[in-house]
Length: 71
Image (cartoon, rainbow, N blue to C red; front, side):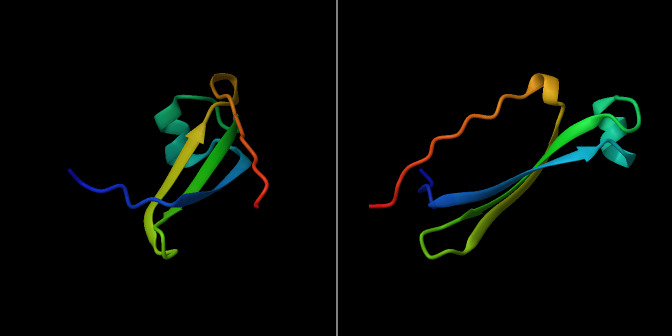
């Protein structure tokens, strides 16, 4: 079993327009509004262990957020 090294992820959600390869992969018209999700996952010492990018059609995406105060 591989240990779970992820401590946290920093995510950025940006409104963009569909162009180029993303447009072809999503099979949508040029200029279609998309949400671009960029994520860096870090381990317990802050080292990046994963980077991911996703382009999402807003009509098929729900954003849910849990916020906590630091103690």
